[in-house]
Amino acid sequence: MTKHRLHLLALALMLALAVLAAGCGGDDDDDEGGAETGATDTGGEAAVSGSISVMSTWSGPEQNSFQAVIDGFTEQNPDVDVSYDSAGDALPTVLSTAVEGGNPPDVAVVPQPGLVQQYVERGALQPLDFATDTLSEHFSETVTQVGQFEDQQYSFLFKAANKSTVWYNVQAFENAGVEPAETWEDFLAAAETIKASGLPAYSLGGAEGWTLTDLFENIYLRSAGQDMYEQLSRHEIPWTDQSVKDALTEMAAIVGDTDNIVGGTEGALQSDFATSVSNVFAEEPKAAMVLEGDFVPGVVESPLEPETGYNVFAFPSINDSPPGVVGGGDMVVMFEDSPAAQAFVEYLATPEAAAIWAGRGGFSSANQNVDADAYPDAITAETATAIAEAESFAFDLSDLQPSEFGATEGQGLWKLFQDFVANPDDVDGIAEQMERAASAAYGD
Image 1 (cartoon, rainbow, N blue to C red):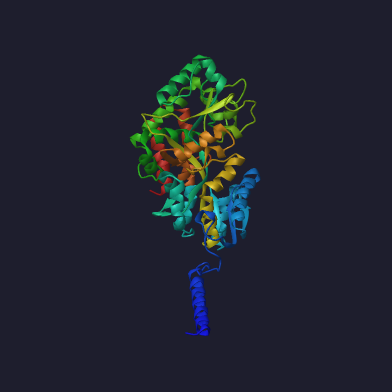
Image 2 (cartoon, helix red, strand yellow):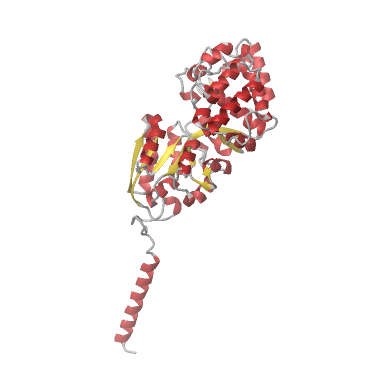
């Protein structure tokens, strides 16, 4: 064989190899929009391109923090243009109008699973099947289940709130000689000791009915368990069930102890949430404890320093119940499917995205792989990591209900729990009223 023929053979072999290599790398083009596939660095693939619109309630400082998260995504995906719109409290109305008009945002972050379910039932949402591996890697099963409807994953919790916290005035506890309690019995006993020291134990913001539903939900999760909680949230068991009455009876141990509530029953029903916090977060407190979410310290200006002036402990266990968190938060959903939208959704599910906002404050994540050091202080780290580490996580029950029953001022659960505070001895009567209201809301 001559040198010339050898040269031609070598050249042909090189061309064949080049064609083969190009064929192996030809999957980068999206088959619909022409955008490059691959999500973010989390998947080890090429960055995507395109544009997406995102909508949520966040404005002001919260919007600035979410923008920092978006910036983290676009740093990894510089060819994606992300535009954010804040709809504020009008988000449900704005989204509904956009969906009906055929022009929804690509991605939205909404505050209620009930709202997510409405869009699932309307066929407006895209399932997040592409993100299931990422979600299972970073979130517990009880957290991911909150975003599952009709046996598919349609959303997940991005920004969370831990509502299973008890905030206390450190000096008031020291004066009474009590410590944070781990069990319900010790908690009630400590409250009696605080009252004996000359200060009411409890500060209740009963003028806002949602604070009372939060108290019930924590008691019910611990006394009835996760399965019963979920059944009640779907109205698969009635509000006259014995488990509900048992929880109401335990709740009465607090709301019925009128001498141990700042202002008594009347004061509790006239105090808004901010007042209930300021009663405790003061150098001369009017009460020792306020039972509410991890957002409590941001509600009022206080001269007290965290840990030394005020502190927090987990809502106590009832009958050896496992650690559990009642939480709220904002759920990520996708209306329009595209490689860029998928990439953004998967990015929000990573600990890297959560850590950006966590470091700026005012944020808790249910992501198990967010390091506690990402949070700006020890108290925030404690309340936030409790969400991720909880053996059971239950989304705020009232937010899971039809709005006219679960979350409307002056009616439904908000009003009925206020009635219960006014008359905590009538457990059977209030349970029957709750069941009638629930049946009407569910169309039973």
